[in-house]
Amino acid sequence: MAKIAEIVKDVPVVYGQYDMVVNGDMSVQDVFHQMVSQGAQTVGVQTDESNPPVLLSRHQLLRALANNVDGLQEMLDQIRKQINESTGQQIDLLQQAVTPHPNTNANQKFEQALKVMTEGLIILDPQGHIESANPAARQMVGLENQADLEVVERMLDQVGFRALMTFSGQSTWQTSGQFRIKSNQSHLLDVHWSAMNSDWGQMLGWVLTMRDITGEVAAETTKSEFIAAISHELRTPLTSIQNAVSNILAGVTGKVNDNTRTYLEIMKGDCHRFTDLINDLLDIAKLEAGNMPITQRVISLESLAQNTVQESEEVARLAEVKLTCEIEPDICAVYADIKRIRQVLTNLLRNAIQHTPAGGTVAVSVHDRGADIVTEVADTGMGISIELQKQLFTKFYQIARQAGSGSKGNGLGLAICKGIIAVHGGTLWLESQSGQGSRFFFSLPKIDPTKILHKHLDRVIVSSQRHQSRFGMLLIAFEMSRKSDVPLRQAAGKIIGEMLTQSRFFLASDMDIALQSGENEMVFVVNDFGRQTVESVQHKIEMNLLNFLKKRFIGIPIVPMLGTSIWPRDGADRSGLETAARKGLAPLIAG
Image (cartoon, rainbow, N blue to C red; front, side):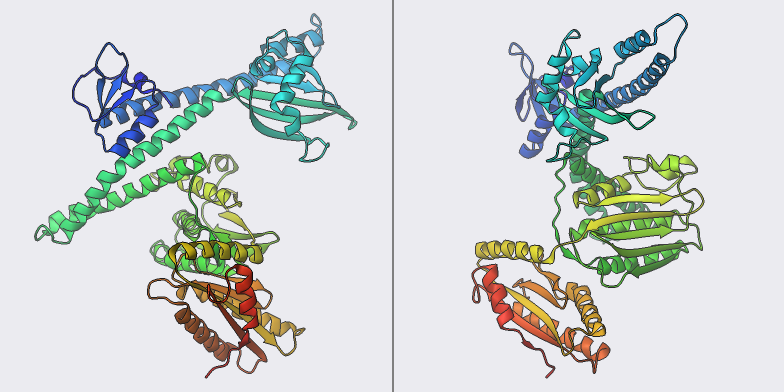
């Protein structure tokens, strides 16, 4: 991030009263954060002890920073252009090097190509020792052009090159890969490598290429910091405008005539769109900084998918698009932030509806795929070509911009979705062809219910100790007269699935969870929260369970057992609570 003194150089020098004083060596980001935290509107920048501080307003700071970021974008574009041109030239040179020429030795030509390359290139033998390193590679690791190969090899080992090229904990080398690493001069290097084999399959060694991306990454970081800063700055006035418009529409300032109301409604809609843009900008900044907060809990994707589809039905109806939802039986729960996963699914659904012509279909489905649960959103829309797919998940990119006026989106939705899923340990991907519709998928890892339950109980115990509150563990197990009977086990699974789906109606606190803890059992952890008590939730669960059994499984020899334990009455730790709940298991029979 640029120093504040560099920004002052580009604005008219003004001396006057200021709310705070900063040193010219401070970064713009730090100055801005201090101004926001102290509520300062002006700042005095001390660039020279012999002169008074230069006066700078918050508006001037942001405007100057915006100009700085525009310059950084031009620099990034130029860097990318140079990289593409340089890489193409280097490939041409290397191809020419292996082509015999009547007046030039092939080896001499190859050596010359290595010298003029701006990318670092290193060749290793089959044992991993350096056979060749061009001048650019030597410079990137902080050595002179004339440094011998033994020195280069020692320097590479110091920064961990060869260690990163092996499988973790093994001596076997990977055939190809990529990593980023800092040199001894704190330069960030992007390294790619791949194995070289002869036409007969004989191992010849490895070729490594590396590029110094320090400036490129710094510029991208500055852009992200600016986006976060300007988004925070815009939130306060926008909130004031929204509140003012809402109050006027509500008649707080007097009766509003029809013409004025029309303009105010337009303003209100624009405020909402502006708010969505700011929220998206903040989300993408948090993701890029690696500090997006997520609150994970056990959630049912079946319930989430059904609710999200239901919420999107009106949008689909107006677009004359048919919405369907299909959930594979016995889908297990996942451990995720329900708000963020709903954000992902809603975005994919709205995009699919928006790009599907009238009369088309958008289908949501949830599948079990081994170690993951995969959610799919498929449409019968225009499809996306392979060329466009390469850019689809980048910031500010929109398919609709390729032709026609397009939609009112901002091109951040898919980039945010991809980041959210990555934070959860999953993957977001696309399968599509032009004219054949699109299928977006995202995967979430399955949970180990026992580990999740133990982790959650430990967390709730600490919270309850701090707030001097109590919570309960409700264990529901199904006792069957014929345990080997497959239909009975399937019936128990359906009951558990239904109870998990309905759990959102009787759990109120963020610290409450419901999960399947075994083939024929499930657990609720319930906190006293407002008017909610453990006993009131237990009563709701009993009534719902008995009513469901009566409607769907009457006459089937399956008996629900319920055991309850209360913290701290029945146990001081999770082990004691689990033991008490299992000891207390008793048949649940309708009165």
